Image 1 (tube, rainbow, N blue to C red):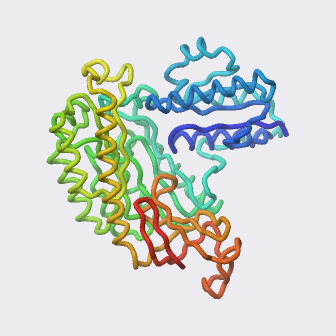
Image 2: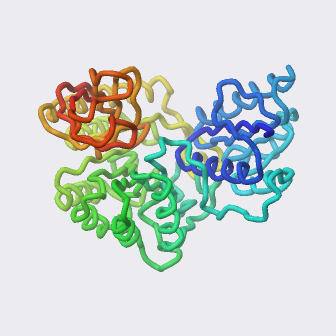
Length: 445
């Protein structure tokens, strides 16, 4: 079969689109190689990211490297799709004429339609059908696209457009199909989980969706990513508290805590409201682990505001935290209204201080887990070492549980596990935590 290489850059939401592309290419009879280190297909498709400067640079560099491979005759045609080309299509066409085909984020079906149908089949995959590139027991589940928040620093609404929810029944149909394929863990994603359903049903339907998902046989874990703090749907906490297969985990990007900075960011929430929200989340879902993202160096962040942010991190003791420095994005509200006058070295210094504080907190929180027994989902086994995650750890971004000394590469024997087979990826096992580090745990069956 003709080979097509697909390279997916950026976030998990982008990955879902790449998986849908692969499904459609397979349906037409093409062999697809995903994220190969040595692309050599008749076509190479790059699904780009255009969120921040580093991501844009990575996307452009990837395209330029492929142009060199094409020049050397090692690959065929190059097709570019995704967020970067959605936003900068005309500029990219002029700057990189070596690229054969250009698409935005939402029109890549044209690429598929223009390819010869090698299978001569009339069945076209449903819009949500895809070929998973994650471990077969885990999948990302995108429930909406776009965002209506228009935060001052963010270009996402410029790329993805307004918030658009998928119907509940369609999402449940996809979940059932993925369960039949062996998926046990669903990482629910969107630019804005909090707004899910408001455009279709007139109110947030996140709680109803998660509750109905939890009812489905075979759905072992549901984890929520990218809730927005303003207009947070509190009823989802009740679902999380009562349903055992809804992980006690919430990813909610807070960005900052100082009121002047929050106002400049157009985050639609105050410090007081943020503190009340976090207190309510922890009260309604005892033991919940919160993941957040913060930003340093946004216009208006002086030393006082940064120290306020640092103290916020120290007192809230987030279980998981990422952070990045502010980078001005053209055509955003911040670029038009606020001068980016804080030197990059100051932004980076603040970021380093923030992350060093978080590393100490993460170590202390992980050390408190030593001696406890955790339910762990095994992702892979390599050379006698198993790697898995607790319900508090999402795929790719959170700590792993490392289980050493499990014998042969095939895993632990039946008599140790009390299972019908050797330990394998996709199994849930009880693991006693024996050691802790800031970003990983060590345990034994």
